[in-house]
Length: 233
Image 1: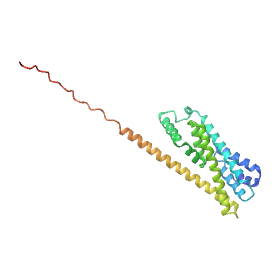
Image 2: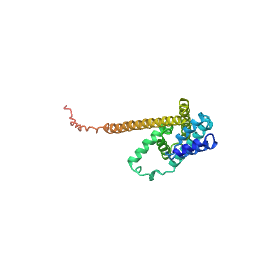
Image 3: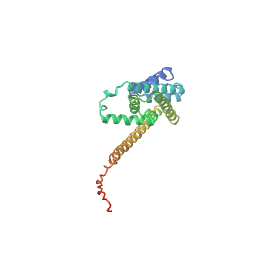
């Protein structure tokens, strides 16, 4: 990662830096260890210092690469046959898929947008959306919005760090990276908390459903009719 960042600094205002940012963002969509955020922040600090590419072009290159990477992960998920995934063949696996599909139907756009800011989470969300047959049109729209927000956010914190620490570009880069990392960790924790609460509610609903079963119908004793007596003259 240090070599990639040093290479980005050496490129400076060369147009090739935009190509590097775009390619790394694409690869990061399916392979999280690639440091696309750090290279984007480094390039944005250089841009703010006047020694890097134009900031708008940088944001567009990063957003385009992020969108392509997310679409690649989504396409890979669509090509995975569900019946070949271990643990999803039984009844429990089918219930898990049903809950995941319902979550995507209710708040799929939110998951895609929030997941974009979590390095490992975005891959899991995008692949799962493809596996579960989420609408390609809806996914593309949500992923596009997420890519623009992600790129603009990282560029903004990089420029802000440069304004605060302009005399120390390396410190500005470090502050920008730390801010992006903290946001990703916070969003990941929030997603886990939401999923835990939803799982607890689902489990409680299942228990209530079983306990609220209708009681067996009461059996009434048969009614015996007395024989009709004839009237005396």
